Image (cartoon, rainbow, N blue to C red):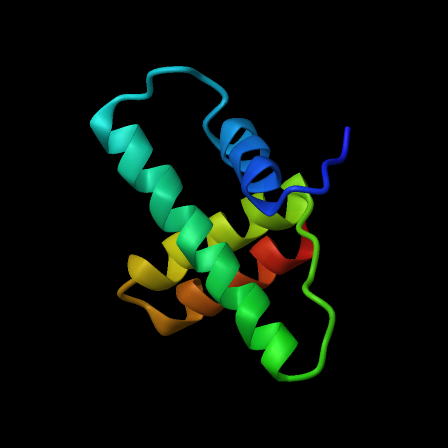
Length: 90
């Protein structure tokens, strides 16, 4: 269902993001930060004269794994590179 009202469309989008009526505070903040990051990326794409990218669940999982590898690097550089390349090949 589509709507002509921007606030109604955003309300529907937020409802799809949270998927529950009363999220916990931490869940609410986490989802709100994710939504802010997605909106920021859309703005950057629009400013660069590109269409905003639609993310699939597979891409989201890939980005989370890659972010985890970058945030928690291995002590050995070769293991780190191997982990990143194996993540990219999945």
